[in-house]
Image (cartoon, rainbow, N blue to C red; front, side, top):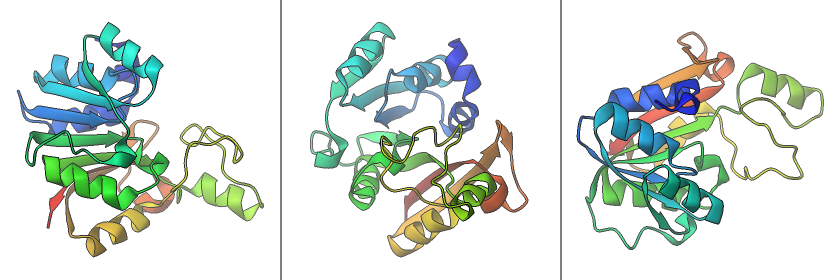
Length: 198
């Protein structure tokens, strides 16, 4: 098993939700590590969408089916209901049109799964109170070179779902790879959601 995948606790949470032999689409799949992990752990049949040339090459080297594409342009190459799950792992905050991407996820997939760094995590709040943009393990970029353009909190995402016809099925909030159940929007650094059309 890939040691990088073992370090990502959100991969384990996602794998727990994926039924064996499910059809999975991973948007912004990077090097294909998550898809490789799901194939090994859940025998899923997966495809990735990635825009970066290095990511495409890494996917091929990982034995992952990948298509080069831009999420911002939609998923018109995929028919409605083509997948059991569509995953957006730590990419939601980096897309320009979050609403369109989530809508497309639920068009081509039965369920969606997203993970994102929680901007409401208390060290982030503390840095903002000190007059600085947060810099942490989950938000590792300085304000001037970050790919993140839509940072959100757990509360923000849940409000988005409520107002955009998205039903949350399950939520796991984590810090340092462990689940957080008390004050998750303050004490959790990473959020993982499974959802469907309402």
